[in-house]
Image (cartoon, rainbow, N blue to C red; front, side):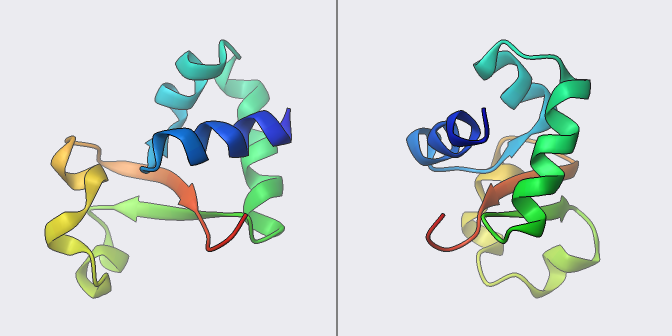
Length: 82
């Protein structure tokens, strides 16, 4: 399942929140939470708090897919080469 999560991120090539990922994979949010945390710890995904303090320092502010789509809160994106 971890491989499927990474594949989904590669195919969409944009940040996704838990709700979007749950719909895309047909998996319960509660089941995905632990898997996402594992991928973040492994350095394959990074967690971004859209609209939070980290946004002010991001180089992609103007081109941020998460902000353009109206996401607020915790989203995930690929971290480098995953």
